[in-house]
Image 1 (cartoon, rainbow, N blue to C red):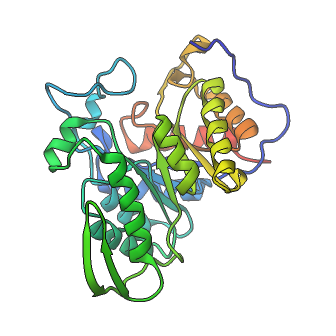
Image 2 (cartoon, helix red, strand yellow):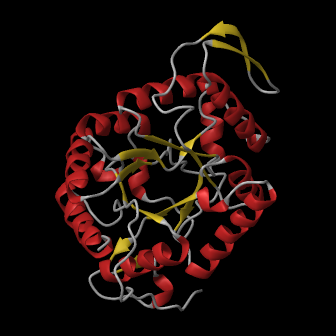
Length: 321
């Protein structure tokens, strides 16, 4: 495990798009709380607001949860629909970007996903960031009737179909290996042209290669800085090989920590630590990787008031200037 001790830089931090996860699950699964936090977070200066995607918590899981001790947080047993929460946030804010980190791309057919996302981009006035991934739970795939095998190829085809349905002109028609859209007229398009930014999650070699080839950025997660740097550099090298500019790619970095009163040993950061320790970690990702931090406080707060208090502390430490 990493033993690096993170420290706040002596110079002011460069400006970044600081993000906050919206109340969505556990005791915070309350649409009114999501609206209240969205409005207050924008007033604090958060520039992006995010939601996640969890469908169920299996009692006898086929897949190991990828965080902590492998057991999903009990809070995941109550999880509001992500795009509905973003719609609530769109009505409660004016300027903040609204993103998904991470929406499972395969739980609904691409033609429905394209319509919902285009509508949300219209509702928000062109503020949507689409973050897609494949998830980790075989049980969730089984519940939605989506095959576990071949999901990478299905994601590739989903990206093709989203771009096709969002392109200029109403004429559509698509025949792929997994989905077919008959020749038709579809005039609904996203407000952003040619479509909202699409970021992709995942840590496997295939997932990172897909980010480098196709995405506007990577949805990363809190890892020790050396490991995170290695993955991000791999994306950059593969982007160059694909003829793309790695400097144009965004790194949106989610942390979902337990916030403690007393400092924790360095190897526990960024999964557990004081606000100051966690902010120092995020500050180093900003200065060394150009990251856009995404702070998820569901494991640290039980009420909207606690959530906003912590959000204010993080924003004060990480604001540019």
